[in-house]
Image 1 (cartoon, rainbow, N blue to C red):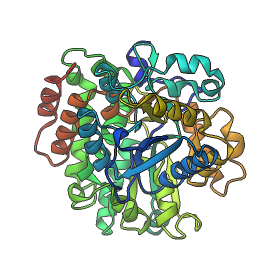
Image 2: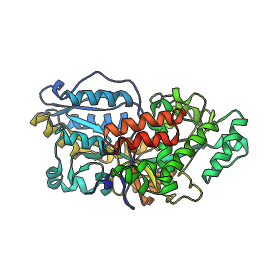
Image 3: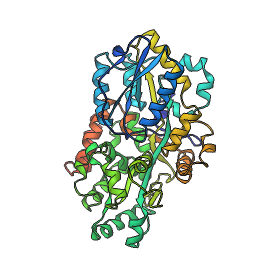
Image 4: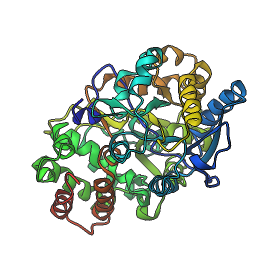
Length: 438
């Protein structure tokens, strides 16, 4: 499999990743901390994902009292730091929750995760029931190193219908519309866009879609494949410039660079009417559902795919996100822990777990899951997500997960500086060209 296939997923398939989850981090613990007959499992806390994940583990443990899963949960940003340190020290969990792509490739190259290719070959039924495209970010050099799991979650442009109605305005159908709405909402004392900019990866979503809408999929594919000076592509510089123009026009809520995604303050700004729009992953629906009171039930949440940019080469039906969530097995785990983990993998995404994910506003990465959506009170949104994911000719993996950890950290650092206007578009490109291939 070519490296670009980690990034580009084909029509008829679906993909996504839970970039956002929050809550209180649990106690530290790793593969070595589990007792005999236990395999440790770290994952993200908070809505919408913690409850379905915990439920899957509880059902497995009840059915397997002599080979249980031990859970530890962390907030998103804390988890990334904790896992990196633990893996580096050889003390990671038996089961590693992640996003696949570049991060997984780093673990593979360091010999830190198990090759699951033969296991999937021996358990074809487990593999065949999942979206084929979900295996792209789970695959390194033609071998599978992770179990695709959970839900498909593309990026979505959410908006507050009530705010738009009160302002007498319509949702944007183009980039020109977005820029035209900015001064109109600002004049009414409403932030055009909510943004949890302190977390940095939230800012990244804007670049992902602008690069795509302006230049098409090849712009970032050249970067991903290590083409020298790929960030100097005219379409990339145009996207960087447009992003900074939106910042300069006060397109984002005041103080966005101090707002964290882990706090869910960005979603709160939307459902409380302090911001008109928000570009975020589809998992935000579950967060708003859990924390926004009757906002969704009252029909106030609007959603749409990101609009085209005038003159752009990209397909406006394409999207970005992550191809499911990915569970790997630590190479440091004992033989017993590895067996427990594989048995757990085989039990995942049963009917109960699928319904649990649907209940959070998520679409499971199981073939035919769309047949279960009609009975959900959130059917309209779920069908929208399924349609976006399955209708996209290209479903790109989130950049910070597609790239190596070194390049991803440089990316997030420079994105933060771009949004605070501490670097120009050309300086951003120069800084990123310097880490291509690293």
